[in-house]
Length: 360
Ligand code: DAH
Image 1 (tube, helix red, strand yellow):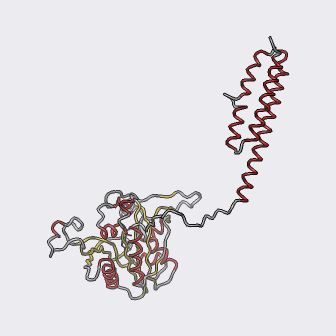
Image 2: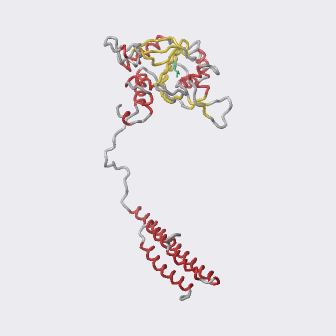
Image 3: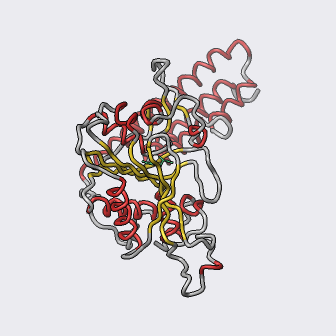
């Protein structure tokens, strides 16, 4: 052995010592400091690894001595590194604190395109405006609802086939009593129940919002939006309902828009009806009816369900049916938007394609 192996290690460490101290002191940010640290202590290419290679030549009885020197060196490197890192952090924090303030509220340099409401929400707002102008108050109801408010109080008997048409998503609520089943509402008629249960007539209310069902095809989506409207007072008849819905059709499609009532069934009204509006996409006179896909050549488009509120429903909500009567109506907003803009599939409304949405 030409040189004492332990002495060779000591010399190696001393050389490294001068180099790393300079390198750490001149590193101007955390990244370059960490680079320098890796050059010394890095597992693969660190220069300490090279010095450690000399360990092979150290006789077994002197290894503990050599090992202690290497460890002491490592500790020193680590301490110097931590110290310098803390200095750099402090310096950059000071620089931030003393720099000119950064004003997040200044306008940006690039023009930012202005968005607009989704066509379904535009239609919702226009519809609500029509009803507000007719004297209805706008009220919101919850989307997660008790079975009682969505079905039971609306006179859907348990297991009634009508609940099949409105099969929905049930919600698990920890600790809820067994008989308080919770669901995503299938219609906005829950708002009718909630409002009638907490107020005394007269009342005239509309409510809009999302509803949920199992349906999924080109005219149905598992989530869609509805508007529910109702009025309760002492002297209310089907004639009032017809008047309001005729005014609604005119508000939507212009004066003279024809409206037709067809008898229909909903458990919460008696009598119940479906309402068609005269097709605005074709006309017999212009010869476009025979090929109209929107009304399927009938000249009528079904838009809503309605009727006189069933006495049982009034009773369930604490309103005396001997004294008060009411009418109610409900419809899907997407359907109105599709008719209004000539949109062929409900899917377009939920795909969020900017090329589609930019057209409204
Ligand atoms: N809730 C019914 C549905 O979603 C729509 C409806 C029909 C609402 C008749 C009413 C009504 O208020 O009277 O299918």
